[in-house]
Image (cartoon, rainbow, N blue to C red; front, side, top):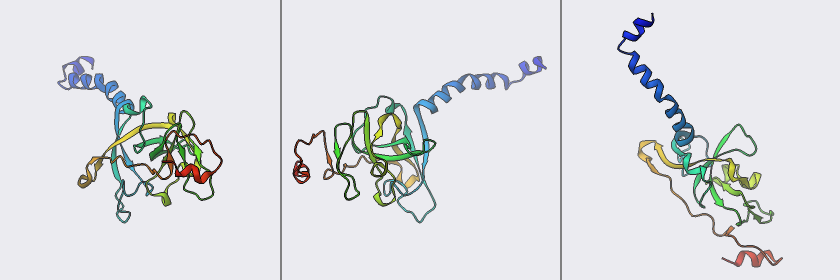
Length: 186
């Protein structure tokens, strides 16, 4: 049986393919992969037409997330802080040292602590995000979302949108007690 396997013209091809499997697994696990975006929380960036049952497919750059250097406006995937078995996709709104005014009325401004960020969906009414669960550890971020792959009509880079400057104070530390004066500083 062994001699028959050695004489087969496919044996060499199979062995070469198997030798490259660890490289392929490493590349998908640590490098780049694809993901399907479900839901409406990131409309209109992803799944802009809720009437079609088609979901966008995006390219995830996992290498870019390993250095933990992020910018406001970037779209990332992260492990949900409330359901650790789920991955969510959100936009980074604020970084450590920034102060954010949450969307819910009556909530006080939140200062983003070191090692954390504030994430939100592009569609506030359909998004469970930092407005619900607060700041999230940067270590929960798995990848940066860099391109839309499907549908072909929308193929291209993911837009890095301007964060809400009326709600985010970059690295500003509040010294006074008057909240109205705090939000006048830009």
